[in-house]
Image 1 (cartoon, protein in one colour):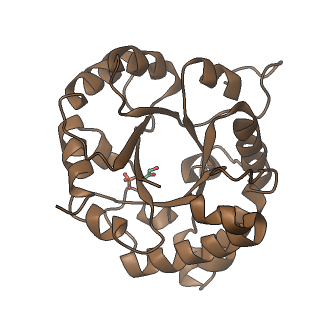
Image 2 (cartoon, rainbow, N blue to C red; image 1 turned 60 degrees about the vertical axis):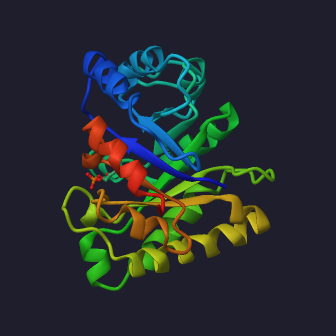
Length: 251
Ligand code: 13P
């Protein structure tokens, strides 16, 4: 199983800038044993795909999806629509959606299930807030988030999802979680997954997100139970992101 690095552009880069990013990124040399994906805004996904041409990386990802495939849901985008565009991965339950848009664990679970049914791998984002960590509740909070999110997911022998551990206090703060803490949290997540999926859990990648950059990526990716990274700010410059991807693999 390859490690995966997913760029999360958040609400940056409309179609014009997205196309320019991909054109620049295509010149970057990428390590063979690393999978690279880019989670672009919905409206920019066609431009990313068109600019990619025959390039195999980055793989297309979305930042959210609704739980029904069609219907009277003004403003929403469905898993099957994303599939038409060639999307392979889709974030669900990112902390910004949970805290700004009010997404609940139940909504996250429904979205994850719908994505899996459509054949898109959900990237389920979980993580505690600063207050929850200070109170010593990190493991309890994350355990619950994971349990609820995977309730409707089937473990069919293949990796049914990716889990992204993103402590809220580390996102965009320049203060990443320590590799030691990440390992502890990822182990906690793996235990929850083992209870639900048995040996399939070993094939589920658990990736870390929160102030990942070129200097700390290697330490995270060489930590036990860390199978990749979800990168926000450090993915916006295509050349710097190329450098980050190369720095993720020991030379
Ligand atoms: P930063 O890498 O900017 O901290 O963002 C992390 C994140 O939210 C990725 O989903």
